[in-house]
Length: 509
Image (cartoon, rainbow, N blue to C red; front, side):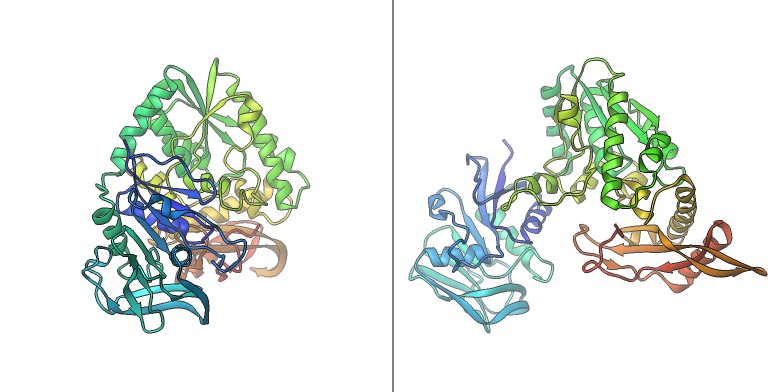
């Protein structure tokens, strides 16, 4: 039985980060909304209560009976979770006179407390709250303080109930990982045996039991998620997995054939489908990015369905859904009001009347890469930058034509080639060229030109939620710009985007 930690989500922006830190310590965990608590059994070793955008003083503040787990599971409340524990136990939580936000240092640490083992005095922690615990209940012991927050950490006397008003999951809390390890290993008794290898072994066994001799069809994109999902399924059911890779005419230069060759060399049972013209026809005259997405999604379903029908007796649809997508669908506030169209192969299950199998739906993106590495997947595939589902269609900021796609592919290929040659490709999280809907005057030789503008974009990020523009050397940018202008007919100007996210997005549309 896989041991696990339950993380109850009260809507904090840091909840997924808590989960990632727990898993970095080789402990499996699951996030569930506070209002959809799963049935708990012996496989659960402890519970973490997350932060929240709410104040415990609000009438509609999230509520949970944490005392029901007293004596059964250790509980750690983080920020809102700690304040809620204090308030519900008879303490007083008030608005802070000043917002407690940013780096502070612990000026009192009870190192004898198991939660704070190896946490030094003056350890830096990250605060992010506008409320504070003003009065602690009589049965609470303060085990850490800062110069402004007396109850920075506490334990309920003689009980395995702890609370901290800071965030150990962020890197700014220098000993946060140690604190989480103390809770997970020393207090909860977790064995830290959840690794990429153990995941592969248990997942393949589970897939074999679930699928038997059934056939599975899976749409490959060339991305990390679908690739790792395909290899896991292939190892479980072999030739009963039928992969389909669609060329929508919106991939990078030569990408379709390169990726198709890679998949075939991996031994996957794969069919490549050239559907460029169907996509170009559907996109003709469309400028709105959301309408582009819908057109691409519609044609993809049609093309995929046609190809899938050539496989007899298919019962399952394989998908590369990962854990953040699952969390999104069952979040505290429910699914997002606006979700971009053409997410994975959304809509296909109902359309094709197939059961769905998602071997990666418990993993975060970085975990998918680790599993892929353990599976022996080529580093070039695992290290590929994220690429939008609609491909170059949303990097052309006007209507899409084969001619514009060809220009953008050439410019993008030069850009990516030089990033790789200079050792910059692996230093940035995502890079790509954007075809701008403007033309500018230029001079080439003795001729006046009036041609298009290409914008280069490169950002650093961890998960895509926030991103900073990459400081690529001017000399490298100059080299890239010069080669694009000299070799890509139709381009006479290159610019570089120095916007960060927020306020800008990574993609332009």
